[in-house]
Length: 83
Image 1 (tube, one colour):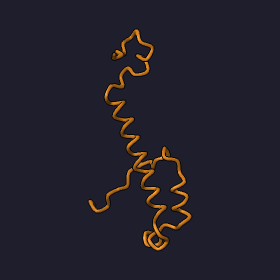
Image 2: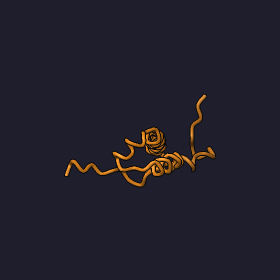
Image 3: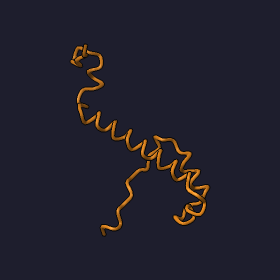
Image 4: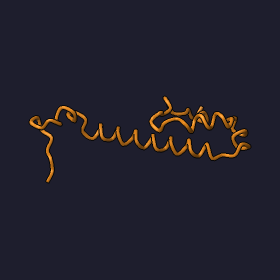
């Protein structure tokens, strides 16, 4: 049994106009949140020597890893090699 969301359905106003774009945005955000979470855990697992090599202190790594999964960076890093 499938539910059709029409103007008579109470969910119609909530989902009207979102279509695939809204679903795509939600899954895209979830993918980015999971990737960021995983990267933060990987940063935390690095040795002190490796952190020093990349210019990150242990305190900075712990602070970054303690951020919530939904606390995403504001923008993507710039690819400086393309300049």
